[in-house]
Amino acid sequence: MHDEPMLPGRPYLMKIGTRTVTASVTDLRHKVNVNTLEHVAAKQLELNEIGVCNLGTDAPVAFDPYAEVRDTGGFVFIDRISNDTVGAGMLHFALRRAENVHWQALDVNRRARAALKGQQPCVLWFTGLSAPASRPSRTSSRSSSTRAAGTPTCSTATTSATG
Image (spheres, rainbow, N blue to C red):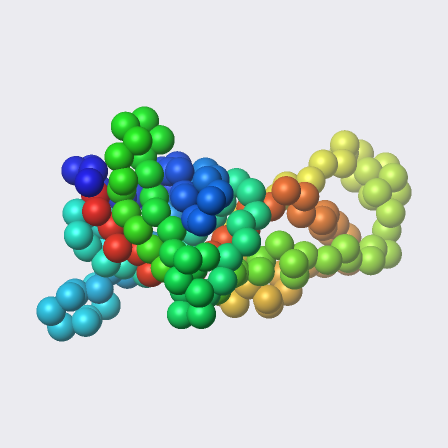
């Protein structure tokens, strides 16, 4: 097992079933004290620590909840440089953030707004929706939104980190 801690944001290889994708911990919710089962705040997982986190992958991953099918609900995290196993985990459910982004009808079209403001139109895409992700963002009738293309699939996992 790997000696380095598992850090949120660091890219790892995630092996799930026969598939390997690039993945990272997007949000380390907490680690679990194995003696008391208490939830403890954490910024990283050390060797043999257990935690609950959200994952982001660079490609969609087919899986089943670990409680239903262990073979397609469990995964291994591998360090991309050393090829050492960093951790293992169990997937519980998918975060469907990309599916709740919808086109918003506008009272003012793009050309009229650009002419009115004397600006060149562009799109700013902010990731990391606040919980709950299904809540629509507050926007005015002058704002615009876009459809997400190629948004990575995120999953919540309980991870037994080993470094």
